[in-house]
Image 1 (tube, one colour):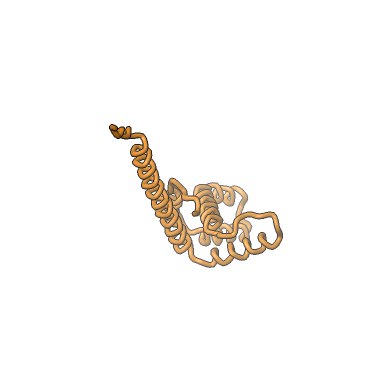
Image 2: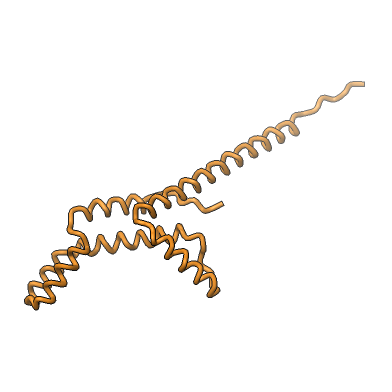
Length: 150
């Protein structure tokens, strides 16, 4: 049974980050404009002002990429081991997962967490049923037996 993550604050945080990023130009546009400023030998003050004006955009993009990286690590079935072969398998699996779009990665993560939560729910239900059976069996054993009169 996989370990179920008890909260999904990271997915909520990722979705909130995407909403925030919609307020800004894309990173590709930002990089293009910044590159043009640098190529055109714009004054340093103008370049620094442009750079600092987009600090939030860069921070949000980095946060989004970090969250995606943690999602990919969570989805990767090959866990950290110290052998070279397993490290190569883990990197290959990570690259295969990364080929999916960001939305597909989040969808796979939600599906995996849902399955893990359902497994946990079934396990807890089964455990509760076993405990109920044990309790009733214990109570049956503790009831006083009637003595047979001679």
